[in-house]
Image (tube, rainbow, N blue to C red):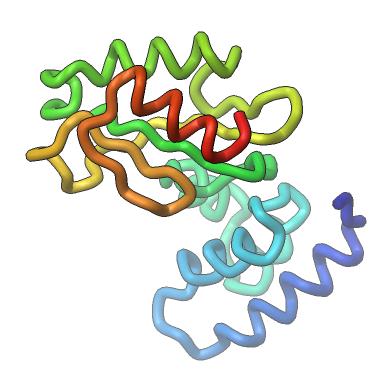
Length: 157
C-alpha cells in the first residue's frame, strides 16, 4: 500500500502526540512508525525531527544505526539468520549461502513475489542450539540447509 506524504505526516504527527512527554522518545516513536507502516518512510523523518526538535540527520543517524528499522517494507515473512560467532562456528555461513541461493536474494533482500525478506541478526541468545534463525518472530535452533528448506516451505517460499 502506497501512502502519500500528507497521510504519512498526519499519522506520524499522531504518533508524536501519543509519545509527548516521554523521556527519550525517539526509539519508541521509530518503533511505532515502523509498526504502523511496516517500515520508516523517508517522509516521516522530517516530521519526527521537527516534532522532537532534532535535526533530520540525527533522526536518520539513529534509524540507520539500528538494523531492525527498515526503509522499505519487508516481505510477508521475515527470516533472520544469526551471524554471531557461535552460529558461525556451527555452520551458519553455509546456511546463509543456502538461503540466499534458494531465495535468489542477498541480505536485506525480498523475494520477487514479496514472500520472504532475508536479514542477518547478531545473536539470538540461542548459542547452545546454533545455528539459529528467527522466522516471523519464532526462534528456531539447529538450523541446517534441510531445516531451512522446511521453514521456507512453511512460509510459502
